[in-house]
Structure formats: structure tokens, C-alpha cells
Length: 320
Image 1 (cartoon, one colour):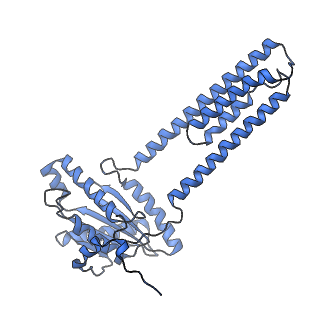
Image 2: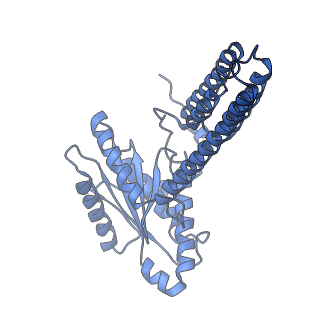
Image 3: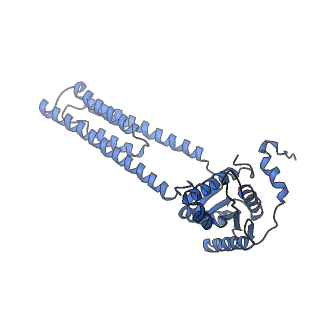
């Protein structure tokens, strides 16, 4: 359970709520497109053949560019073609020679198809662009966000937490002697180890916190709305649970971590430098340690199993 250590902090804009709002917006756009089709058909019905040839349907097809998915474009284009043909048969009389009317209808149909193809290609390009954008911020081995995403999102969180006066802590975790481990056991085994570590960390933190791979042997955690004491407690649980864990690797392996909390006067560089110094302090003490700057008291290590094993439903409720 990702809420194993922390209680969940409610998000100001849950992703499910955002997805629901987006779905409603796209539904409204689709209904507007249908109404526009009907409006064009009514105009075509009451106009003489040769005056309106159904070309406005192509504009409505172009409007589906702002509706998610390709299905809406296909539906609007198919309805436009159908109404273009229907308008030819139900219009009361012709204001132009019949051969001119037929040519106009054929050109209108071709314009609708052309608009559909252009919109579908644009949607496909947008989809591939979004995939590339996602891949550009993901580490391919762990599927965690990478250093670029870490610095971007940390900068955003810095501004947000300074504005609303909230706690923000970050932790940098480094596998001790990982370069030697890679040389001894190979890159494939090393990638497997850090992938397993990243997966285990994700299971021990909240969904409001984020894991990043910022270097070959380093992972970072952004502890949202968390003070340094609590962040250290969680980090010690993580290091204790993952160090020399046979489920991750059969070889001996330990983790060191450095943590720091955002101060009002901090810039991005100051916060990262202080966290880096805390990590070096942990490694200086032979590794397998969590250090903070400023220093805080460590949690009682004997209490760690109780924290890990106790489910949220078993927590005693407090009454006023």
C-alpha cells in the first residue's frame, strides 16, 4: 500500500476529477458539432440547388480537431457526406443547371473527405508528440521521471510551497559503491537492481510524492507537504527495508540518503546543494545511513517493523 507510512493528503485537483471535466468538455464540443450539422442541413434544405452545396460541413469537420480521439472526426465527416447527398435529393428546386449542381456536390464531398484526412493526420501528430514528450521525462529502465523532470517540478513546487507556506522536503538516495557493483556484476544486473529499488520505493510512499532517477546510481524523492522529521522517518524505513534485501538482489547492497527541507530563503540551487551535502555526510559515516541538514534525531529503529506491518485501518481513531 502506498499509504503505508503516510496518511494521504487530498489533492487540490485530483486526476480523476480533471479527466471527468475534460470528458464533459469534449462531449459538449461533439454535441455542438452535431447541432452545427443540423443547422447547415436546414439551410441547405431551404436553399435552391446550386446555392448551397454542403461545403460548410468541411468546416465542422475541421472543428473536430479540438475533440479528443479520431472517432468523433469519422462520425462528423460521415454525417456531413450523408447530409450533402441528402440535400441534393430534398432541396425544392434548382437555381443552376443540374450538371453544375452535381459537380458542386461532388466537390463538397471531396472537401469533406480532405478535411477529415487533414484533421486525422493532425491528431495523429499530436498523439505522437505527446508520447515523445512523455518519453523525454522518463527514465527507460525504471519508468521513473528523470533528472530533467525532477528539476522542473522541484522548481514549480518551490514556488508553490513558498506562496502557500507549506512544508517541502527532498531526499537523494544513492546506492553505496554502485559503480563497483556495476563493474563486478554487469550493467544488466545493475539496471535490474535500481529498477527493483524504484518499484519498492513507490510502494512505500504516498501517491502525492514522486520518485525520480536523477543519475546512474541515484534516486530522488520529492516529499510534498512534509517536514524534515517525517521525511527522515520515511527515508529510514526505505533504507532499512531495501538494504541487503534478497528480493532485490542476492548481492550485498546498501543505501545512503541525504535530506533537506525548503527554507523561505532557499533557491533551487541552495536546496539541492544542502541535500547533496547531507548525502555526503551520510556516506562519510560509512554509508547505509540517512542524514539531514539541518540534523534531526533519528527514529527508533525498533519501531520500523510496526510501522511497516500496521495497516491504515488498524490505526486508532481519535475523538474530540
